[in-house]
Length: 267
Image (cartoon, rainbow, N blue to C red; front, top):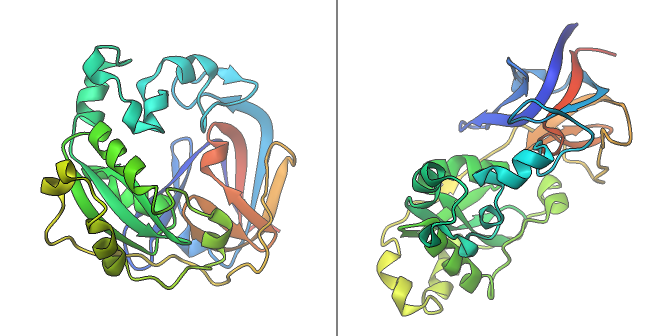
């Protein structure tokens, strides 16, 4: 039996076929694909620490931030979830350097297939991470725009015709609509405002992803470290940010900063 102790971090991955996943517990980085089919146990030790500053806290804000970091850090600003509200050009960005390196950079507006077709945005250099974290089985960039704010405006416009959300339960059950992203792109072209037409990609590439799974759950039961101090079961697969056990599914990102002990091959 192997045991690791420390604070959980969001799953990391490498784009392969299937996606190769790694679970992070403080400085430990554990390859998880090779653990699929085996028993794991995650015991919450009752302490939560901010993933940014290390401060102990009673509860986290936005996947592992303490209140101060949630309030002050640029990555927790409202414009991170509503990019059309970006206020960098107003001189009120929480961190000018962060704004330059994360927001004032080329972004993709894309179509992704995870449960149904959704529209989304991602910084060009972070596209694979974004798509895999959403559990997408296919993704198609349709436009490359100069800034995050521009991408946000186009996303808001296109969300009139497509969802900008993923149904995570259907995603985990592999209940995916049979739609062709190329056809959806063609349908959207005439709906895109003239001002955005120059940024449409003329020859985009379609990306496809497969995930390590030996079983598709027929029923989704959420595992919650706030309600149960121990999560245990046989690891049947990993998709998005979820560990899929025979006892339920655990959203690892949601519990970032939770101090745990992780046991592999435990019974």
